[in-house]
Image (cartoon, rainbow, N blue to C red; front, side, top):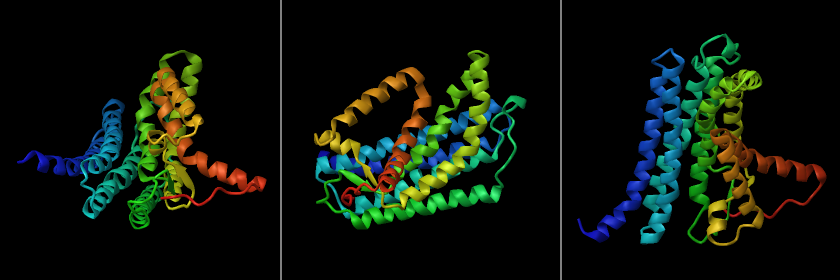
Length: 282
């Protein structure tokens, strides 16, 4: 194969890598249903969440690689959306379904009344998948090459998937709290069941935000083009410091801040009677 053809194929391989990560996330989550012990169930769910984050990396670089090599096309855009529907639509919903419906924590200290019916959790997962597909389809028809890409209209599907996948990533730190003294153990006894209760609600909220018209900043584009405000740099520095201190616990907080911070701020502006910002570019 000629070098030029290899360069042309490279962005497509990155996009397909995204789809492979999504399939891997579903596969690992399915393995959790085949076991009953905490250690065995926890491992596949953690790996499933890691696959979703790996898919985000492929999704970040495939578009950049296509633009860098001059191989952007409608086929690539459609292929990207199809792969995103798997990794950021189906995989997070199935991960949430597995996370809630199966006994992840064994022992009385992590017991939790089952307040969700299987049908309700399945319905929330189905709504998430539908909203993710609608979000991707809307992005395709409303975006063209001339857009500045400084912001998004509605929560991006990778960020919504990050809200769901971040909690299984944080579970090791939460479980480790039980070994850090009596106070930390009491905190873990509260937080671990609370995560199981809250995750379907976060999944449903992320689904609604994906099909909303709330403006979300594109931090990567703004920083690379030198358009990002100074506070974005400060936020990144603080986030790095927080990760160094609290490790995986910061990941769900960061994704929830990005996902829910914009609608809270928009609601506050409306409550206070402030003028809304101009419509966002896609």
